[in-house]
Amino acid sequence: MSLTNLYKKYHEKVQFLVIYIREAHPVDGWWLGFRLTRKLVDKYYPKAATDVNDPKTIEERRAVAGRCETTLQYGIRTYVDEMDDHVNKAYSAQPTRLFLIGKGGRVVYYGGPGPYGFSPTKLGEAIDTYLENETNV
Amino acid sequence: MSAISKMVTEVKTIKEYWTKEVRRQKVLEPNVPKVGEMAVNFTLTDSSGEHTVTLSDFQGKKPVALIFGSFT
Image 1 (cartoon, rainbow over the protein chains, first blue to last red):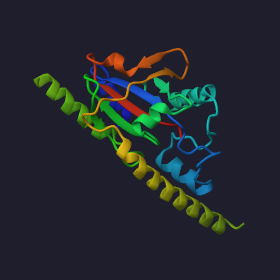
Image 2: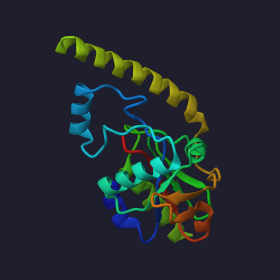
Image 3: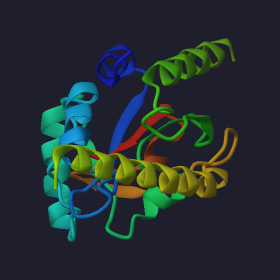
Image 4: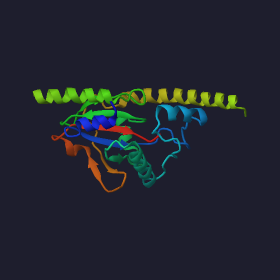
């Protein structure tokens, strides 16, 4: 299940927040390479960018986040972590990670780090389980 | 540099990156908020700089799905 479909299915019962954090593979940082990597990224992650520098200011970070929001089109508003990365650090979120927080403010589900541990399907299962139990209580 | 040696260099770079990334994630994994723990509260502004959200505002109202990521 894609994030877009997950959002469409649950957005009335669950608040979705996309949080843009530090770039995982900026071209001026830990960029993996050029020709070979670009081909692999284009094949498996066609919407991911391969031309982004690591933003140095919050304005630059917001601009990249806005571009990301427009390109990926999840339909979910994107919030931007501050330059001190405090939210990223608090959740050990980099490069990508999913969480479900219950109504009481406690963690109900946490996914593995992306890309391999990033599973909207598992998040969907966690939402189903949470909503079923909530109904029963 | 020939095409083959460029590709070999890239593969080495990817392997080096992967090793470091796996090591980094192993160090960070114990710090991930676990099931049952209180989620760390935060207030952030959106990409337009116009809208702000605070996680605790949803407490008692709705569960929250947090989707962390970047563009690359």
